[in-house]
Image (cartoon, rainbow, N blue to C red):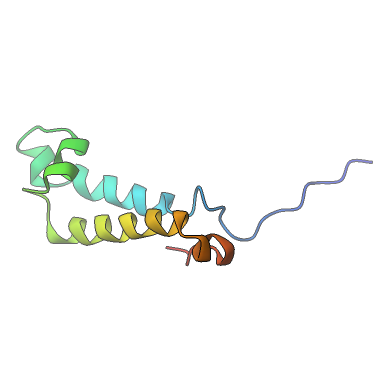
Length: 82
């Protein structure tokens, strides 16, 4: 008989920030930087001019989430579920 693998209830560390990344990409894609200036999402994130403050705060949260993935205390406890 086939037994199913144990399901994880928490997101793994490698994917725990993926929701924030999706949110950041959507926010920047709808910004003036991409829509009016015709720049790439990556360029707009790196430059940050023409990107709304709400996108900047999502970016800061995403960066903190990624930093927590390298912190050993956070790696043991797991990310906070951003």
